[in-house]
Length: 296
Image (cartoon, rainbow, N blue to C red; front, side, top):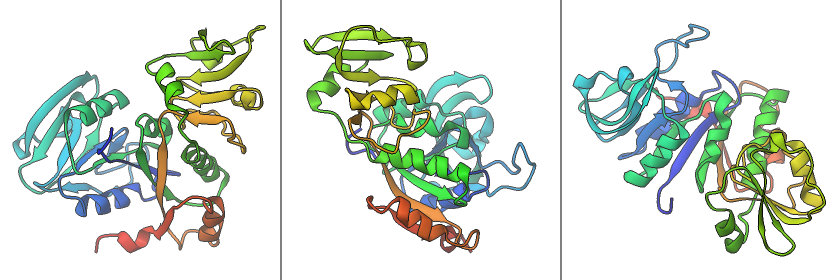
């Protein structure tokens, strides 16, 4: 993904202000492509029925969304991807006029195909709250996080993203050995590659064999990450952890992510900025008031 900038906009709860941040990025980014792993740009929230901000695009933008959400008289279809039962075919399209748009239906596989086939100034991905793991599928992805409060649920999300942002890549020879593997694999003391299980969830015990490295392509459980005291662990997805440990020594990832910016609503909760600065003190993360970027 060298030379291709992919930005995921994530929030700690519904209504945190993700769409406001997305619209701000769209206004400032000519030639970018906008997509979503959830649903964004609808007139009303499909759960609460409350009005939602619309996503506005111009002729200098591109969108990746389901064909059923597009007024095709206002868009030129440039490419067609796989079929989604709800959204129809997922299409890459360019607006013919400035218009609002609903973006939905993109999967991790389609976003990967998009980065391989097309070149944009930037790809902006609206991330759904229940699909946080999607932001860890591409090496080098950047994250803009919209934080609503310092409550327990927000803390869980922030902690997971900070954990993923602090992980380094493994040595190149180790990364090459694990490239393309699915499941859980180990490298033993003799340097041999051994299949351990199809998933962390199906591991019962390791037996007598000792490993120097363990690779996890899917979800990583707390018990697996607890093995970091006796071996090195490499994750395919740094956000696919059930519960991130406080200590990330001996844990690596093949897909590095970067928490680049945090947006907050300073009027929402007293002490939010102070708490966030403590959490990110070792990372070069900007913190900005989301209200300052709202379109007037």
